[in-house]
Amino acid sequence: MMLHHDRSRRSAMCIAFVFKDLKTGLETATREDFLRLPLMLK
Image (cartoon, rainbow, N blue to C red; front, side, top):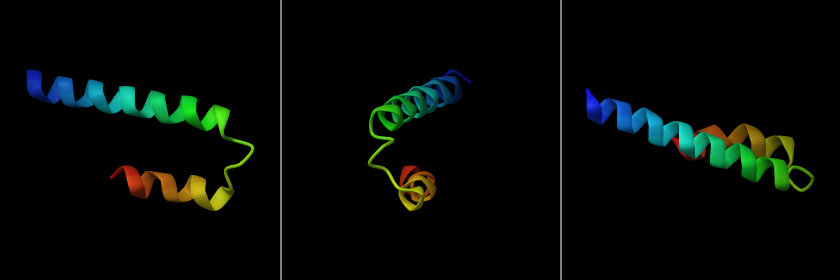
């Protein structure tokens, strides 16, 4: 149970980091890159 919680928490942190990074690099990022992002995270 704790392992699953830690895993989901780490995933949430990763998502938050990605969104923060997206905010800074939004101008250079293309729509294709944005759509490809979830595939790279898997």
